[in-house]
Length: 361
Image 1 (tube, rainbow, N blue to C red):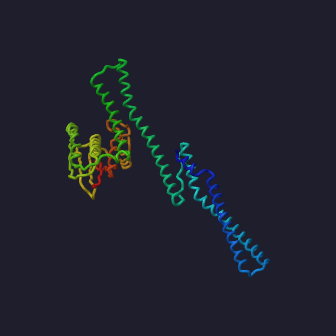
Image 2: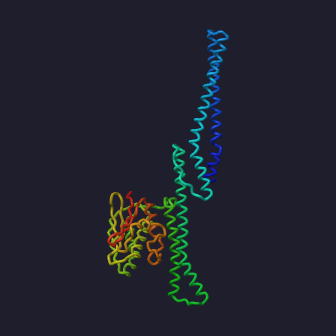
Image 3: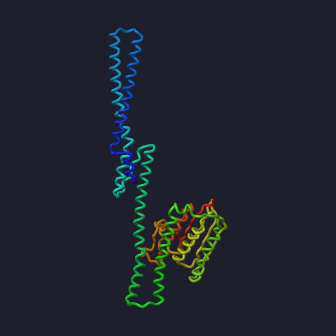
């Protein structure tokens, strides 16, 4: 059942009038019954005292009745207007919620509702505004994700389709170099799909909260990651220097190794210069800090946060040789945040440094 239907079921359109009418009837009944009780009690008391004759008793009864009627009428009228005003003030935010949920139901996103009510209604309004904001963000992200996916997959799929059709039609003849190119394209698609799955796993709190965490030596994890790049480093004549202080942390080993692997791979893909790649790690203020530095093109300040977004790449040409899939740093961000850590990038003097922190628990 949608939020609109739930609210409409609980708060119908004529709710204000029904509530006001019901309460006014109850208030009127209580005042009239109280007035009659007072009237009868006062009359009986005066009669029992015996100080008045019949005419005086009737005058007293009539005068008392008139006063009670006037006061009761004034009280009922004043109380009804006051009750309607206060009830309308309380119900108005709920009516605004009904109107906004209708807009959501029709596919529109309403403007935030002014939070003027206090108590539970005010909290409900604030949460509803937050829900609408989150829905808008999710819709934008979903649209962007679909757009990026179609863009990223279109090129390799077009290449594969073109080459395979040409092979099928006999326009070109296959050779090891062509088959290797086709294999690389299919592998790139496969890797991208795996990265999307990995990103989904770490980007969903319901998934990673049950991920296995255990005490691990951070030095061993980083050294294992660096060893996997040894051949590539030697082939490109690039030095890698490790300066990692021993520390045992409660982490998900596969996740942290994925972080370090992605950062080293990013450093190699954007390596320009002759300086070595540095990986440093040490304790600072109850956090373990790790940094990966490499010489490379400067990262503009306005793009330092954007590079951690999914599919974002500084390379405007989106060249797969230099830009990657645009998912590596997004995965890094999700994994570090799931460990209650932070990640940032610093770019100055021709050196790009990616730093992340892990809490020491």
